[in-house]
Amino acid sequence: MIARTVAARAAASVVLAGALVVGTTGCAFVSTQATLIQYDPSDGVGVDVGNVHVRNVIALINEDASAVSLMITLVNSSQRSVNMNIQYESDGVKTTVTKPINAGAVARYGTTVDDTQIIVVNPSVKAGGLLPVYLQYGDNEGKQILVPVLNADHNPEYDGLFPASLNG
Image (tube, rainbow, N blue to C red):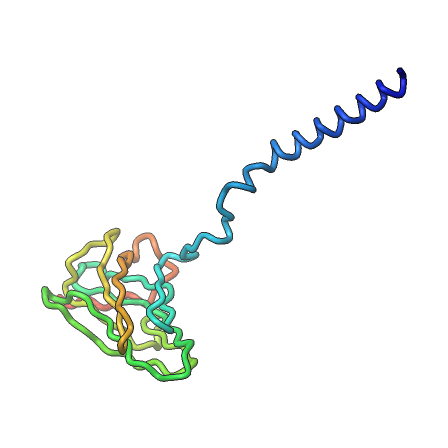
């Protein structure tokens, strides 16, 4: 009889321990792993267009809102050079600039004071808004992204990268 009681207690302990483990970790069996959720770990946004990885796209607007500089990094992971078409509305007109990206290379625009800037004149958005930008190259399907528009007031980390005023 004592052996039965000890066995019953041992079995109850195992069942209780199993229930405790499942109860405290059961969520991991049915929920999405956070490491599988794609997100942009910076102020900007990103997208993949074919073999080109577009990263950390930000629109930096000047003080009088007369111009925006696009900060953009383009990573070409293919073995061929490509010409990326970047389209946006500038001064009320759809404008497309084409930027070459060598095979296996990175092209940056507006990310340092020495980079070439892509300037959007009289953008139809204000600081805090989202600027629509369409990206496409070759036969690949293009993608539109909504780029966050930042100003200098709350973003000192981008000092020197904002475009000059176009109003004088």
